[in-house]
Length: 355
Image (cartoon, rainbow, N blue to C red; front, side):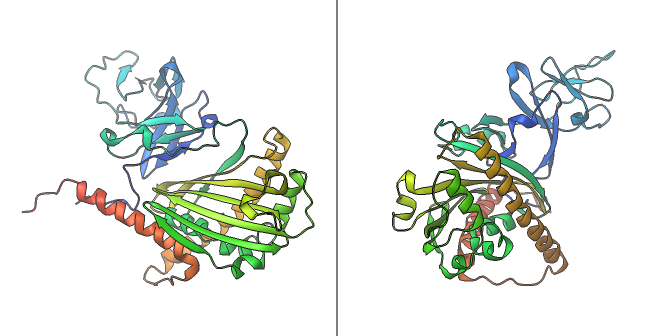
C-alpha cells in the first residue's frame, strides 16, 4: 500500500520566483517529486518530471530552445505538456510522455499543484493584496532548510522564541510577558500578541528611523500571525509611538509590515522557505527595502540553525513526546487543520483490493 505523504498534495505551493527561471531550466524537488521548471511557448512557465524518457538523465541539466526543454544528454526535446516533440535522428511518436503539473505565475511567485491536476483551481491561490499594489514594497529571499515543514509553522505561529533566538534584533523580554491569544476561523488560525509602552528592539528602531520617526521613545508593539493551509503564514507586525492606537495608529506614527512566509515541503524532512516582508511606508525607497531584507535574512538564518538542530534531535529521539503549552496554541491548531486535510485526502484515495 502506498504510504501517504505527511503534507497535503491537492493544494498550491510556491515553487520558485520568476527570477530563478532564466534561460536555463530549474530542477527542484517538491513534495518528494523531482521536477524541472522552464519557460516554454509564449513565455509560459511549465513543470514536468525531471526525467528524460530516453536514458533517465535529469532534464534540468539541459537547456531551453524555442520554448522546448532540450535534454543535455542526447538532445531530446520536450514541450510544456511533457510530450516528446523531437530527437536528433529518431522517430519519437511512440516515446512515453512525462507527467506535467499545473503551474501558475501570480503575485511575484510561481505556484505548483503537486496533486490531482483535475482538482487544480487557480482561484485557490491566496490573494495577496500588497503584491501588485504600488503603495507597497516587497523584498525577500529563499532558504533551503533541513527540517520538516510543520516545525517551521510551529516556529512562526509562536513568536515567544524571538526573546531568545533573536535577542539582538527583534527579541525582547516583553514578548514572553505578553500572553498570546489564538483563534480558529474555519481553516485559518490567528495568534496575536500586543505589548504596550515598551522600548523598541534594534530591528524596529531601524524601521522607525526608516519611516522618519523617533526611535528612542516608548512604543506599542503587535504581532498577528495568520496560518492558512497548506503551510502559508502571514504575520502583521509593527510598532507605533505609544498611546496612538497600536496597530490602528496613523501612518505617521508607526512602522508596520507583513512578514511573508511560504513554506514548501521538499521532502519529509526538508523545505524550501520563501520569506520576505511587505511594507506600505516609503515603498519607493529601494535602499530601505534592501536594508530591511538584509536584516530579515540574518534573523531567519538564526531560525535555520535552530530548526535544523531541532530536526536532528527529533530524528534521534523519535519516541519522545513533546509538551504542548499555551504559547504553542497557534502551531497546535495549525497541525489539527493539516491533519484534517490529510485525512480527507486519504479518504479520497482509491482503496487497494485485499486478498
